[in-house]
Amino acid sequence: MKNRTATLVRKTKETDIRLSLNLDGRGTYTVDTGIGFFDHMLELFAKHAGIDLKVRCKGDLKVDTHHSVEDVGLCLGEALLNALGDKKGIARYGDRTLPMDEALVQAVLDLGGRPYFVFKGRVPRSEPGGFSPELVQDFFKAVSDAGKLNLHVRLFYGANTHHCIEGIFKAFARALSDAAGPGKNRTAIPSTKGVL
Image (cartoon, rainbow, N blue to C red; front, top):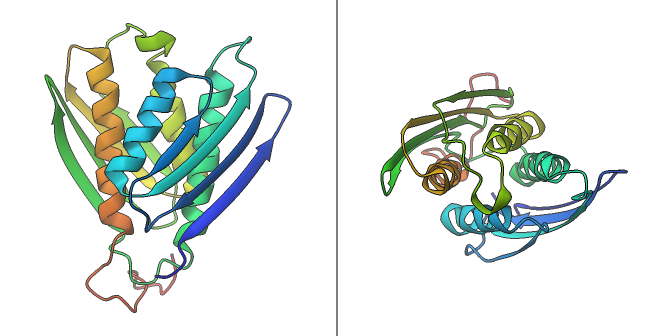
């Protein structure tokens, strides 16, 4: 488990993204997507996952925020996959339930190489900072697909949209920190197949 870093560049007609991360960082971040609320979520994700994260995204925000949010998710997922390498020595699984004021959220993930995403619960429909709640699912589906990880998110309850979304990002961050962290056997790949 050394040099667990990755840098990705993605350039399309909709977005121009540069993302780099260090899984064994200190939770430092520099984020600029042009979407203030989304920047805040990515910053607290980095802090709570304990990873160093740099994201620069120039997107077609005159159209809407969807392309930027989804494409950053694709880049983050692929960067996680690349940084994890052969996954030797990781715990593989992570499960975190946490409160964010009145909201209660759970994120469960498996870094086993098979993408799957499930979201249960209803995020209130207000738009903090103009950020549409439906983008949360788009973002995490993209992370799951590109990162080849199995992610289940459950919002048990919550009334404040900001708190619900923040709780989701924090629960994912903590679950990822656990899953990407050291497993009981630090020299083996955590699978009977021998590969992940």
